[in-house]
Length: 167
Image 1 (tube, one colour):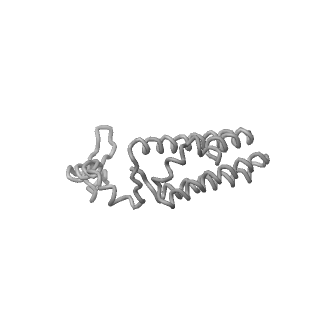
Image 2: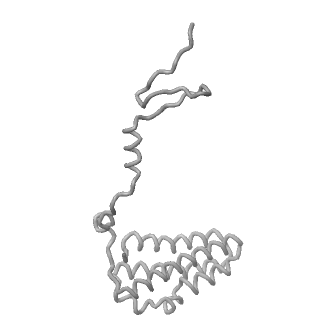
Image 3: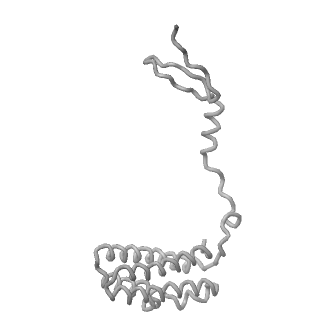
């Protein structure tokens, strides 16, 4: 019997390389389609793809709020780092001073609140109160209840970010 040669498939043509390996070559049209499909498309109108409520803020306030949100994220990361090292008192201090109710003045909450819809204000207040509850729970020294309380903090963040946007 003679050597069986590879046959063409529906995906393209089959070629045997000089080393004897079989290689499938896609037709030019299919390769072009794949490349074109991977190209970025013009951005759609954000109103069409983002159903969250847009909260319009003056540019300086928008920058201030974004800086606060970034600081909140850094604070959460610092809290998690302290928790991972078993430093629950440090986690409590970070939470209360950077996220808790005692951090409201530092974040300028009073001058930001009038620009926020009621639901956004409630979500923000819920996050700050949850952070203070977490701080008290972390000070008790038991990590599992502290992690549960921290989940309430991040749940408030998720709720607000799911419902509102500022850009």
